[in-house]
Each structure stands twice: as structure tokens, then as C-alpha cells.
Image (cartoon, rainbow, N blue to C red; front, side):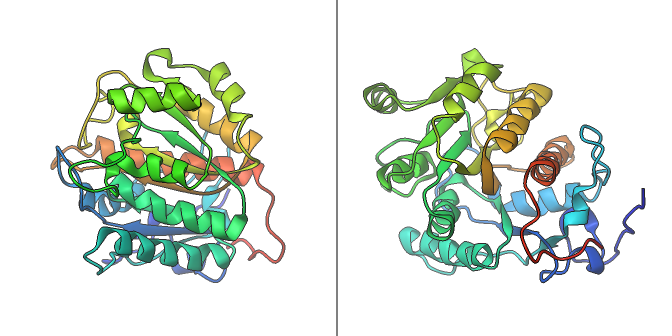
Length: 305
């Protein structure tokens, strides 16, 4: 199999792909870094997450061993960082939505790199506007269902509450930190949930997944993982997912549903500890391999480099 040549220079793009493999016009996948951090409430640093993921991705092997595939051959364009100028939180999220919608309307599979979890509202709403009725699969330690947190309804702790109010069905996976308000909401509305103490729970995951619409958006908060393998996040919670069982669930997600876009959020890089950055980059690479395997090439797609 042919190796893609590395590209040198200051520009960080996902996997360090050369220009011919990362042109926007011919790439099926677009990576959008969004270093957005406004409401983090414990550990800070998620604004540095996108750059760390891109930097770590340059060390990811281009050949994906589980499926014996090369996701880079779909074409993966990396955009400059997008940071909304609006001070008002709702307006800032609307700006993120507009930016995401621009790329989804161009027929791209959008990977948003955060940044804090509040930003997810934007690309999910954009994906619904472009793709119609869809659901959300949320990998997370926290329910993020608070009506508001620390004085704002647009907090990272409220992102899934806003999406539920939008009428978007969701499946939460790995939840093990929540308030009584959130627990009561889950029980009262029978919100599909795979609890952290049930992990690994692949059969329950697939059974609940079947309750969602055919099209889904994947949001992955890295604090889903056990802090033993993902310490670099603002609010690490004991327990959580491990690497290969999580990949099996993600593989099932891409097999059983049409994933139209995704994000990876809440990485807060730690100086001198690159393992977490590399894990987040590898997670994106694995998801793109699953996309390549299960999702047919759209009509008129660009030829492989």
C-alpha cells in the first residue's frame, strides 16, 4: 500500500497530510478546530484541545490496523481554527452553527474539534438543518442536562438539555456524574442511558441505539474515558470507558446508523503528557476508518489522491 508523504511547515492539519490529500474541494472529510472555552467550571484549558489533537495526529499511523484501511484516502481537509467573536454566548453558538452548516451544505463529513462541550449545540443544529430528522449519540461522563449552570443556560453542563428541548432524541453513554435534577429528568422522560457502572455494555448500547433515527450526530466528550487513560480533561470522573470496548461500540454505531457529523471535545492538554492528545487524535482516526468502511461514497465525490 502506498504511503502518503508527510508535509512540513507550521500549518497543523489532521494527520499531517500533503496538499493533494487535503484539498477542501476534493476531500470528503473536513476537520474544523473550534478552540471555544467560555463556561468551563473546574479544570481549564480546552481552548488548547484542537491544536493538541492536530499535533498528536501527525504521529498517528496512516494505516488503520483494525480494518486494514487507509482513511486518509477519502481526503481530509483541515480548516483554520474558528473562534466566534460574539461575546453573547447564544450568539457565539449561532456563529458556530452557521460555520458548521456551510461545510455540511457542501456535502462534507464534518469533524469538529473542541473546545468545551457547549459548542456542540452549533454543529448539531446545523446537521439537523442540512440532513433533517436525526438523533445524537453522546459519549460522556456527565449528563449535561442541567437547565442552567453558573448563571447560563448555554453552559457545557446544559448542552444536552438544550438539544432535548429542540426535540432531538439522544442516547447517552458512560454517564456517572449528574445532579438530582438530571437524574429525575432521565427517569421522568425515560431518556436512553448507558450508565458508567454498566460499561462495557455493548448489547444494551446497540439495543438503545436502535431507538434513534437512521441519521445520527456523534458527540464525544473525552471525559467518557477512565482517567487512567484520559487524565487531560477538565472534570475527570473515576470509572468510565476503556479503549477497545469503546471502539467496538463506535464500530457498531457506524455499522447500524448513518453518522453525518461528529465532534470530540473537552481535551485540556497537560504539558509534557502527550498520551491523551494522541488518544484523542487516534479516536478521530478510528471513527473515520469506520465511516470509510460503512458509508458509501457520495455521488460526485473526489477521486482518491
